[in-house]
Amino acid sequence: MPEPTKKPVKVSQLCELCHSRKAVMKRPKNLQKLCKQCFFHVFETEIHLTIQKEQLFYKGERVAIGASGGKDSTVLASILKTLNERYNYGLELVLLSIDEGIVGYRDDSLATVKRNQKQYEMPLEIVSYRDLYNWTMDEIVACSGIKSSCTYCGVLRRQALDRGALKLGIHHVVTGHNADDMAETVLMNLLRGDTARLENSVNVTTKSSGSPIKRSKPFKYTYQKEIVLYAHYKKLDYFSTECTYAPEAFRGTARVLLKNLESIRPSCILDIIHSGEHFKLKERKKRDLAKNRKAGKGRNTATSAAANSNKEVEVRPDGSVSLHSRDGNRCERCGYLSMNRVCKACILIEGLELSRAKVAIEGDTSVNGAAKLTKTLEQLSF
Ligand SMILES: Nc1ncnc2c1ncn2[C@@H]1O[C@H](COP(=O)(O)OP(=O)(O)OP(=O)(O)O)[C@@H](O)[C@H]1O
Image (cartoon, rainbow, N blue to C red):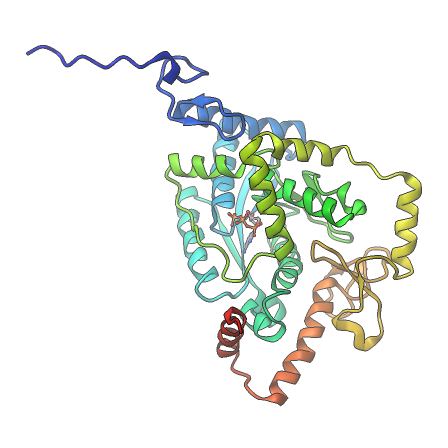
């Protein structure tokens, strides 16, 4: 029987890197036509180069991966395992998950992380808001409404990741924040005129004041679309549902704007990050901002939940909160490391406790029911 003849692949369909295999995709970052193998290679190599250039790790370092079960952190765990073995980084990788207490969302995504733990053979530590703060996000939303949920969650999660890492004796947490997240942050700060934050919004590595924990973002230059493609082609096991509570409204606006820009000019994500990297505040402006902040003036100054104690609190656009700073010390309330007399998390929790007392006096204290009721009410239009 004659052998079936293989249909020749048109040159225009060949991978633009290896020129031998068929291209299966257009790379979102630069529209290069690639085969699967070459895509894996460039994707992994770019992340390795970022890690090297930024000198993110040292040999023997213990690193906690902030693992939410979503695509970004799942790909991060998979890639770090691959690169650690391929390039002999010598890292000890641990999965660290925060259970915010969001029924029907986080419980399902944590089930994914538990499967990842076995797939990647990494230890897993789960720390919950309930244990740390005696609140769940469902309860917080029931008390304070859905609008400020991202603010609360952001502040509490940042601290919870730090505390979870410290519990493990780890001083470095990596997260799956990607290039799209970075560009969104630059756009948001730009649109708000928040020049003070523009300068630091694109740093790969950050540290909260007073915290001994370093946080890094190895996906700083990695496009979200490519992360999804990688997870898809590698058949990674991840949880794809969005958080039950709406994303921060203004970030959502910046996201839509960015997606529109990206569809016209794919490189704009990197271009925005590049611009962010070159914003530098004049020394005088920096001093003025610091003075204003100390005096409690400025665009983002608000009297927060701790207003009952007449303290001026600055609520920053990224959700972090600051009181008058002082040198590294411990929070008066919870004893956790803080530059402020009372840490950001305690300030928020204090306000919540006041609202909880009010809810208890006014009626229904069944929190799960209250969370559902809040969501239902906010979805209604009159
Ligand atoms: N509950 C959590 N536990 C541990 N780490 C978390 C948690 N939520 C978020 N992170 C970390 O912060 C990063 C950014 O979180 P964000 O909420 O922006 O989610 P995302 O962009 O959907 O990421 P992912 O796809 O990993 O969920 C995540 O990639 C992860 O590393």
